[in-house]
Image 1 (cartoon, helix red, strand yellow):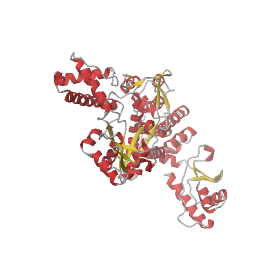
Image 2 (tube, rainbow, N blue to C red):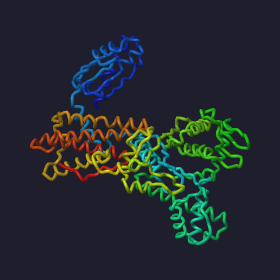
Image 3 (cartoon, one colour):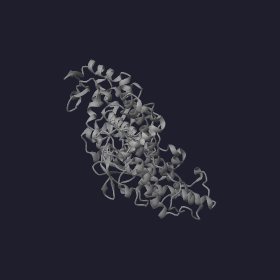
Image 4 (tube, rainbow, N blue to C red):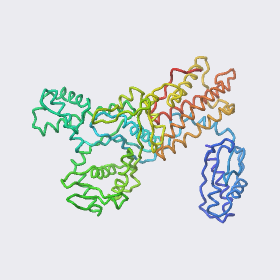
Length: 557
């Protein structure tokens, strides 16, 4: 590719100039960027400024020396010094034609990295099984799944895991609520606890349990009855959650129960390992982790004075369990309310003998869900919430996911349901999908007219010379680097912005350039450009978990 060829030239120039600056190997490795303004060329490097910082020389003078030392290359039209010491390059269009051939050759794999032989676990959503997923879980699901897709595309072996708390006070209140509704359905006296779950879905759960298990559970000893109904209710909620996530394009490789950690003795093992490492101590009849030694604002309880573990105690055991399964890297996708947990969990990893760099928390900010500008209620316990299923029914998975992934996860965002569900070109997801469908329509209509795509090696791609054609080709050329950056920075919103730009450039190309014309050779070149654009749009949408439709309401040829 053109970048490698340019970098080879720049390295040669750096090696030629380095000794005159008093620099010895290893010399700095040059890097390329793409100028934001066309008049600044196709590529730029700041290596002269890096050399200046090491040698104390003048960056512009060093840049000029580099330009003079560049080996001759017929693909370089111009190299010139710019700004404080950049070297800008203008190159021939041949490299863009090579990009087009590469897109066609690689197809769905365009920009995919070779397997790295490393395993990553992405744990996300992880809502407790106390009720259906609501719209507050949507950003976590979209972000976690997009990150998993990016990891897989960039060479990692990925496992998606859902961790759920099926023990503790919250689950006890849920179990008591299901028990009360179950007994009420049988005509028995029972009340949902004041601090329990009052949503109508609790009665639905109780009815499902009654249909499956019959009335016999009501006559069990109270403790056994409560435990059975809590378990039956939670297991059904997990089925609901799995079904909802499948509708949202999300599947998990594993579901992990917090209660299993205690049952297997792993929490006690984690506590003992922390004690032996000198990172845990007893005070007030409880066991504490010295989390202040690792940047936390206060020490944290692992085991309470009554012998019950805390959520953090389970977190420590979960770390050991995860890393014992052979993962090279762990990613937790957490809402902003979990930000305070980062230091203590990474500290626990270090205290337990693991590298804290193997543990990564991706934090996302909250979404304000609105309807015509008015806030949507979000209380699961009272039952006044919009479920994720209802959001999918109303706006669709594609629109929901694309909108949620349009913004950097470190930004808060507004999600107005009435705006997102509009099917117009002002809606970003509709605009991009319409671009894909428009290309599909062009290709279909060309075939109907008897214009078949000849092998791309026979196409004269040098005919693609207009500004709109070249701009579109450049946007396709940038995609592999966009994907790498989105993966490295945990920033799938970069994909959403890139695919919007590609769709916009295609729409401009379509306006300026007639694809199927009397010029058979030009028609072939433009059809291949259209074909490649369609492929790249589909690839990027796929990484976002969004479909690429072959037809929509407004397409033309």
